[in-house]
Image (tube, rainbow, N blue to C red; front, side, top):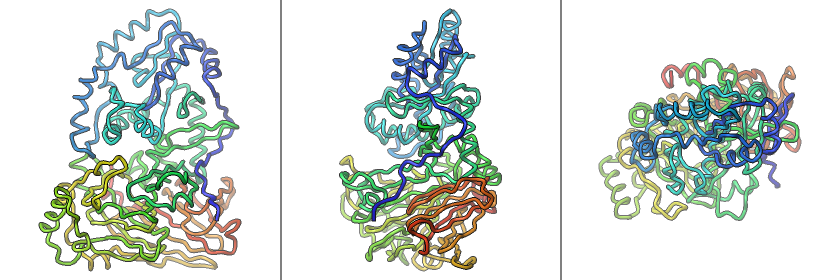
Length: 584
């Protein structure tokens, strides 16, 4: 059947317009005859494109690239090293501020230079508003994290204050995750409310600009209805073929391993302004509409972080994931500065007959023996006999297994997992990767020492079967529908509910953000009982977010699904778990 998966969902915005193209943008900027224009840039923005274009169309008397005012690369490298660390994968969440990248005396020099200019001055780059001090007009040039990662891979972007264009993607990503994005998100939250315009330069030489008023109104409009962020997909050494067909992806690539359909930290949000579409980081919605999106209790507990992630793991006609384990809460906080950890679950979206998961240890496993064999496998490239130590379980479509932190696990070949997890998504300690290379031809990093420190050795097959293996509990049923709790895990703050239905089902956010996926059925329609939002069509395998502010909503089979059974999985935060789990 032909894919109906929407890869580019757009939130249509009313009552505002968008300027497109450098010439039109420059004309808008000239209207106010500003003396000093500051273009504040998120890391990854092509500063030179902005400088070249504004030089051409505005012809300012002085044009400053903020890189000129930053500390030397050597000084910045030394400053960030304690947070980037020498670990190949992990760093420590940096408490740095953008001001730390500049010498105060240098800032003062540039401020004096700018004050002496009678004509127009344009300051461009991260920290533009520091150098310009009190600009007459401020533009924020934003950039989604996924696009930044694509630029790292093409060697066209570098880390904040660095010129490391040719460093490995793994290093640049780690540097950004632990340092750059923390620093610049903090600064964005401080200044965006005071900006005049927001600039989208995601597409090269195709800039779009909206007023900051339009942006904030668009964010308010977005949280009044269900919406989707822009999914992105990535190949991997174990990747499969399912996502290509279901999500209509490039068939020429060898595989797709991951599909990230709800990772607001890295996804984009597309805002439609008439015939123009503006791309912004979806995390802006979390930052600036926190309580309406998350709900008061979730916001009080997590702050402006989105706590739930949905993504796909495709091993159909592929290979096993790495054998892995996630850190305990205390360990992730001590070692990496993260306040909560990655409890997760695997919802089996699709399987072949031979599908399986590794989950928990076998009875009587000796920790020293297992770790010794893992070290031998890593150092001497002798295969690790996973089935001697880790329990292997057959799984079928719609099974749901819980994976609390500290549990050894791995999804096997010939399945598609909808992974539902807490947000700290890079903290996977790989124990064994089946002796294969990454797509770059190099071994993927193994984290045996971290793994040794967090594996819960008492989670054996009997414990796994009783506590986390495909447990369900009926909740309610009515005419044409039934609801059940799935993936039960008493330690996780994520609650998951599954609905089987042939008729309309009534849901309510209960002032807590809901994240759902249509795990069976061609399409459904999401509606408001009081018509407070427009009907919203969801297709098979699409993830969508229902803001806490929405309240009541219904889901009904639609189109080709009318009269047929559909299935959704819904995740939310257990508010009674917040005080024990999270940030504040």
